[in-house]
Image (cartoon, rainbow, N blue to C red; front, side, top):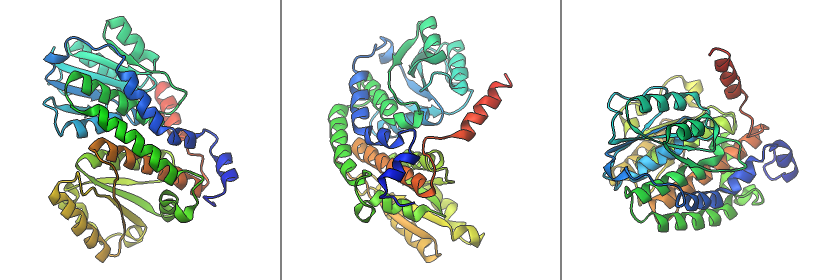
Length: 356
């Protein structure tokens, strides 16, 4: 598929995935502003640990918050993907944030009930559904938002922006507003570089997508860029209908680097992308990027590198997410796939609903 054929792209993109990606800067800005208007519970100063319960696109915003807040926050933040919560999640000094875009994610609803039974404080982050109804009925804090977006993964600006607003107002993070403002400007500037009207010859997202056709992308990130690599993997899965993998540094240096011999027919199809930030990677991890990249190259594995741009951690994270979103969109188009369609997920949800 020609990635410069705008008419064909429009025909394939029936769900307007491109429009949602283009709108990320404004979505992120709107979410941050909206968070400043939401009710702030008076128990926040007593909270000693935070758990964010979510799945898929509703969990990734929590991953991003936990990684960047971890740089300065005195309050630990843990992401739980599943029905249950650890035994220590209980009592009035624990806050469980139930994040579900639709408000109907069964795992998150189950975790909400567990947290409620154990006496933890709850905050629901959702557009509505059963989760909003539960929070209202139980007198728990509800942070709701409205959007025309119908896919959780396309609402990353909402989930991350709202959580940043909460972390800032709770005092878990400082100097967040200026970082968000700089991130929005950075996203708007890079939209002009990655947008669909920019031809492949000068569009790095389109060029990278062309290299992924027939290959298995592997995304490597360290520190605050580990959840960004996870986001890239998820976007390639859902938007591009492509198998993809993510692995963190330095952990992969203790296992994955040995798996470069077999099976050769699979290894020859890998394309490994390192997300490497000179400013915000640990110096030793930055060295590991270089050494690991060279090691894989010497073993005949295709490698590449993405260097984030931005003047703050939040700005670099969001700019890298933006590139990954465009990359996944163009990879979908290159395969001739509608980025919005997620038939297997919908089939699984229906099958689960049939076995209540």
